[in-house]
Length: 96
Image (cartoon, rainbow, N blue to C red; front, side, top):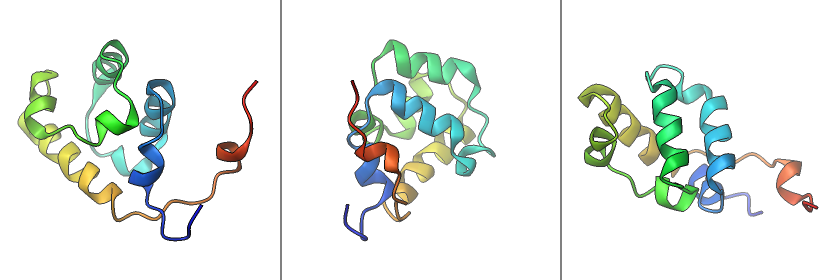
């Protein structure tokens, strides 16, 4: 992994379950009120990291979110392109 990789680069490859686990654990999202319904919707729609990075405030509004959290989530996605990814050894392990 290049030292210039961003979190967006990493999320691009995430399947739905891994994306949800990442989002639930990211402290940068702690101030945004997402609720479990948001994560359920990601799972129901089979939203992968690649697709998540394309979502806009309008689509989040269609998820049933209020305007403020939708705007904050859109900003969060934009910032993922600036945040440097830390090496996670789990990314290099082969799954059986």
